[in-house]
Length: 249
Image (cartoon, rainbow, N blue to C red; front, top):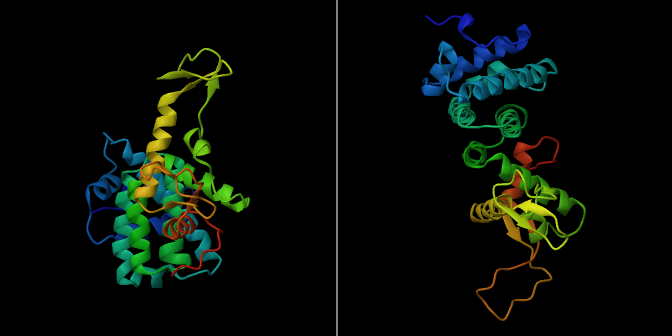
């Protein structure tokens, strides 16, 4: 029989109790859950991210429960909670990066406990989180910041060069490319940004702001209007970042 010693060691008792409750809520142990419980000697790299996700989530939930934001016992009785947790745990096991884990934690806390979004909405958010990378999340953040400044969104050139570093000789770059000023940058990073931008468009998370845009004579030309968060992208953003004033249900 599994005992508390098999569980990750939380820093205090309150989160540890929450971890026990969360594990007991999962309807059946998938591979990642088994790995978490048994604490295998040989660990998949995803183990540590899943472990950190669970411990961080437990701390967040314990804090909310202490502030009487919700009752954990009642929340775990809802049948949809088990399904949502199973989906969130599997997504966490396939995630890499602190920003991605934080987004998953926020979506779990808000969707399942704090704001209790609809089941369909939370499932859509977890499905998207399972697909996106930290690069997607950073680009969404940048677009949101540009929109907040009232500039109509993020320009194509800004997104293409997002996070691109420059140096004087191109050393350390996978595909060094020169600029008119004599500086070098890694063209592979810019190419990846373009692919991420296209992926966000395909997922319907961003759109092209064509308010002041006139169609080019060549209908096959790429639209160059600024990129903005779509309605779907705005709802997704509000679920993965706290204090963004979401009203979605």
